[in-house]
Length: 200
Image 1 (cartoon, rainbow, N blue to C red):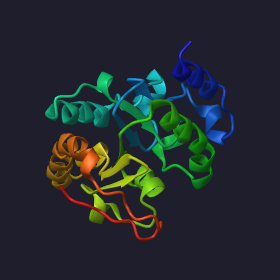
Image 2 (cartoon, rainbow, N blue to C red):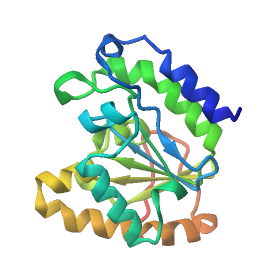
Image 3 (cartoon, rainbow, N blue to C red):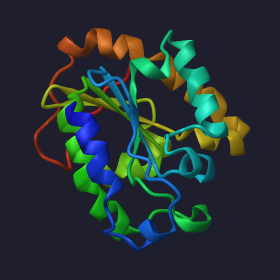
Image 4 (cartoon, one colour):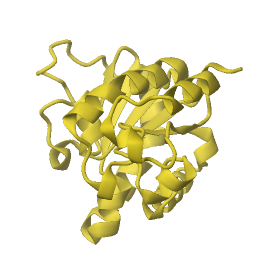
């Protein structure tokens, strides 16, 4: 049994948060076990909760089109969320839920060892770019411990605000270049508050 399969079985048993009682299915994540790129969204929605798969609703279909714009299919990347169960009524994840689920996300990152982590939306951005604003840092990247961290708006944002669509599509197009340049990107400063950014 692969390490990820074992991981999925463990996540399915998790009852740490109140929302675990209300889920239809846990949504651990899916994709290539050796993916170069890990996309991290926010939380499962209704469609995801029904199918146990991330990004399968309208935002997921848009993400598929974004991936196609850089010649990738979802099977070639890995897609996960900050939390693995759907919050009732699609409310925002609570700090305790994010905290409880952090260990699962950390394990996924360890198992997949991506070259690049793309944060989709402000909840996953806050984990890797603390105290930053998504409107200021989307489309910028930072390298730490040989991993590129790259902030983007959540695909769902473009469905609600047409004006963001252009930014999201432009940010997506930078990804192949960032990966190609990965080796030459200077390591970010060590002080957590002084995170240096670079633009493509």
